[in-house]
Amino acid sequence: MSLFYEIFIAPVKGFGRIKEKPTWVQAVVPLVVLFALLIILDFAFRWITFPQMMLLALKDGYGFTPQEVLADPDLASLLVPDTGMIVSGVWNSVVMLFLGLLLQSALFHFIIVKDNKLLPGTIAVVAWSKFPLIIAWILKILVGGLLHKPAVNFSPAMLMSEGSKLAPGLGVLDIFSIWTLILTALGLSVLTEKQKLSAITVFGLWVAWFLFMLIKGLAFG
Image (tube, rainbow, N blue to C red; front, side, top):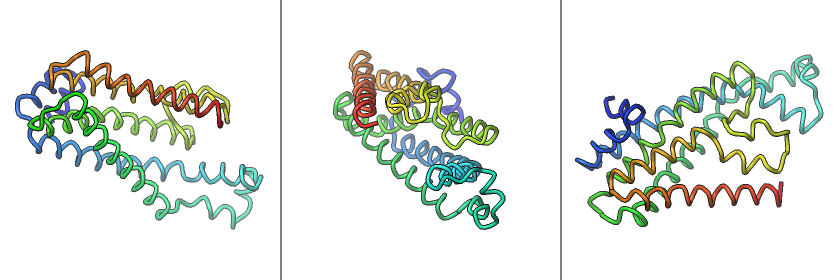
């Protein structure tokens, strides 16, 4: 728990501890904790927002208003959370996050670290840097539950009108994702003492992704 606290309050000190003894335990523990928490949070978020998501689907797909859905017992029964569908969605999210984390670790290790002894440290840095996602999910549950909004993020895309071509690109500007990028670059720089290379690589890849999503949205909507 002390390392968890330091990553948020004093990340340089926390990542310094990882550098001192880069073991597989440091890499595996945050992975297990991160995925366990995100599974719980993701399930809770999907369960809370499921009725609103179904209302939107029925409106967009069939033209039913919320009043019509609630007045029809058969349609109203569709608003009951589908556990199987939710579990499937949560599982897909976790798999994608896991694969993304491993891919990022391998990429940063190949470009920046280049020391097999520090491979566990690289994975640990990337994993610990994902903890802002937990805060994001907590806020998504609170906001999504209170406002009954199935799609909640913390980027300028929230201010865009539905169907805006800028939304995919601006959605990348999520403040918690940027926080994760800062922690990742900081952690890699502490681990390797390659400050410039770490910052350029981490933020360079993010800028490339941002531009890709922006161009994709503008070109294909």
